[in-house]
Image 1: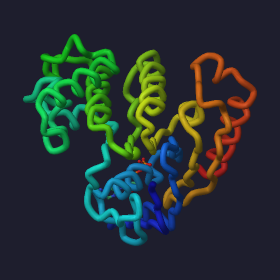
Image 2: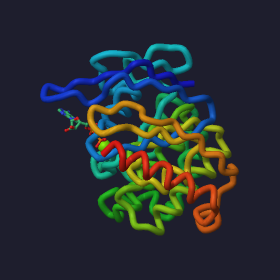
Image 3: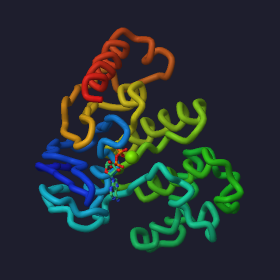
Image 4: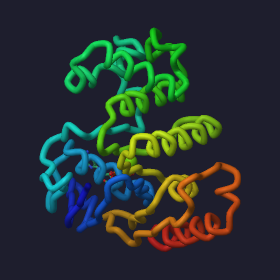
Length: 249
Ligand code: ADP
Ligand code: MG
């Protein structure tokens, strides 16, 4: 599905990424963890075709990514800048669909389903600034879900919501992924979240980032906030990731 080959990126004042290579198979959910400032967002922007890397390449279904591919959706950490303030919640969710779904009633149905899945049907006609931060982030997620991308890239999507909302959104993501067989790459700095959500955890080093490990998370696909996190396998995995991160800080 996705292949990142020897990706490197240098900003004017330093190297952010160095020879990052990995592959993501169709239907996989891969979490990327690494110390703050190590280059995770840079990596995601390069993968999305939003930023041209200094070296290396990104391939989506065998095609080189040099602009934002149509089958991609991105969810950024900063929801306040990613929603359109002059459009309603429903308007924000349907906006990218105009190019994808020409049929108006089909479009409306997709918007309604996506809003229902994040529990926001009741605010469809409100504006983003009338909602709490957590709700705004759910709108951004609904927008990505309604688009039904083959690949979804998410940059710390749950970092700025409260703990309960965060757990709900994690489970929503797992549920949607099971329903639509989406491929997802999610950046997080939360070790527990990376293990809870993913099939694989890619651990990046401190800046300039390289991939220091690629850990297979062998937990059963069906996860549950309390029992999964309490299982021996989970506890071992989270300590493996934590130990690696400690070593690369
Ligand atoms: P992370 O998402 O892991 O916190 P970033 O990719 O945002 O890391 O940043 C990696 C490094 O590149 C940091 O040192 C950051 O200061 C630098 N950087 C990020 N974006 C830019 C930019 N647009 N211009 C210059 N330097 C940047
Ligand atoms: Mg970042």
